[in-house]
Length: 109
Image (tube, rainbow, N blue to C red; front, side, top):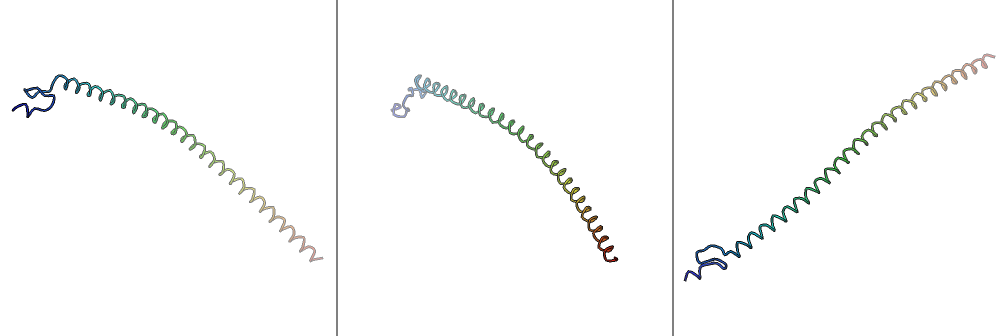
């Protein structure tokens, strides 16, 4: 009657058979092998992503420097434009003053 209570592959004393133990060990070894392969693959992905991240950081720093140079260049250009406009405004004011002086001289004649 004790045979009815034993699981398949168990001996009479309730221990697993040699075949069951061997299968469990082989399944465990296969699982370890799969996990190791997956871990190595993930490490490769991490290394690739770290290299890409470093490249992106370098590119970002380069672009930041370029933007600063562009900003400085625009400030210099704007300053130059403002200076030229002041010179033009002064020249126009001088011409207006000369024309006013000429008109007043004509009116006096």
